[in-house]
Image (cartoon, rainbow, N blue to C red; front, top):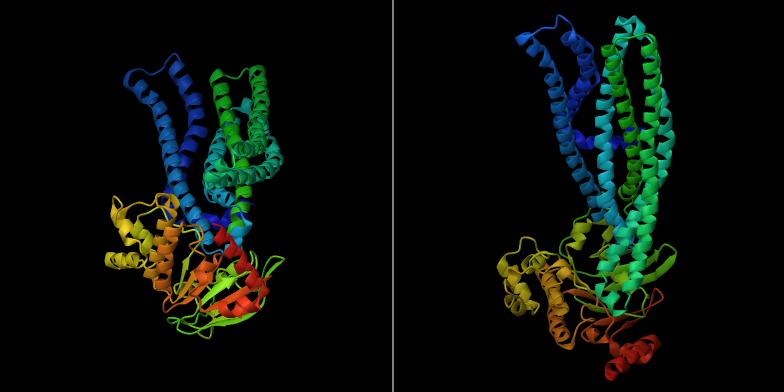
Length: 582
């Protein structure tokens, strides 16, 4: 079962196989020193030094030196085993996390709409650690502990052969299989409870992530107590599932110790009846202890593997998730886009929810197109299909006459710049946040892009200028400043297609004016899709597409649509009244 379930992940040990193998070898040395070395010392050394003709002087010192030698081998083997297992384990952990994170980077946006961010974080951080522990611990223990067990049993068999009265020890050895019985039963319980606990850990992470991302809203609506209660309830549930896992995990050792105690009592009874010498009894008990200790540890390994199975299920949910926006196997070249974008009979839905229906539209190169309609009408989805954030369920999208499914996603997205409603900056310098648009850009090119985005002056006014750290999600800059940095990024990218997701809707009048001017400059000579929430942003649009319930019900400039389309007119008038009242 172990090899079949975890086999593909053992290959992650290949780059560190020498260190891993050396660690296993040291573990075997420690096991042999424990399982056979200690009983051997007790059996032969004790009577030698306590007899009437015991050696003295240098001979005695030399004989006694065997004790620290055995313990030194055991200590050195144990340390080196632990160190190199940890070394290999850290490598596995790094590889598993990188593998899961890499997979996540290429999953479509629909995956994130269905999965809680906090739960995904829990899988990447927590479940990978559980899997790494299981791989290293199981392989190490499945070699080291049997080596200890075999060494101890070998010594007992040796005694049974050389000491005729000690044959009863073979009966004691026969109790070893009895210790295995509870392992299987308890393992099934742990698998179920561990899965529930890890799922609840993801829920807990999700609450934390949501709360920390919404600190202003929580305080503005006095949600502190509600959030405390929600977090407390999740903690209670996590505590319940974790405690059940601990219960089944920790009950195994006492059960094995109970079987061990029965075997030891049986051994002592026979030893007293048979009047066996004390040193033989002591060595027998030591060897029996060395038999049952590995079984306890192997039981713990079984539990660890069961917990890892639950984590592996959660990780493989990510690793085996199908990419619904697959990369083409025979990509066509995509030179700089210079012609039209065509939607042909495009249909799209999120599960059962139909979002776009039979969309047919052609956007000429250099056109500025505004997408207008009520919330949920399909505007954002229409724009998101262009860079292949999603693929249509039916129909096709052509750019310069080439189906976008037939070009590499990186080639396509390299020619599309996105300026979102919420400008997302990374925890880095302002310069590096702009450089995202063109990774090999010079500082002069970054400065020029910032000037075109009306951002250069405020950046220079910062204490560290372009080297200023923006903080998490750009928290050290104002909303208008963040937006201008994101526009500078788009200028630097110099993409022929621009998608503007209403980048001025949440800004004050002064910031909106500066950004509107920058956007007009950015739009010149490019194909632009504006997802319009504010109609003030579409004044310079060449054409407006009116969406309603997933369909384009009208198209044309404002002066044509206003008198002819009732939906457009109502949306426009409603917003005009809102602006006037302000």
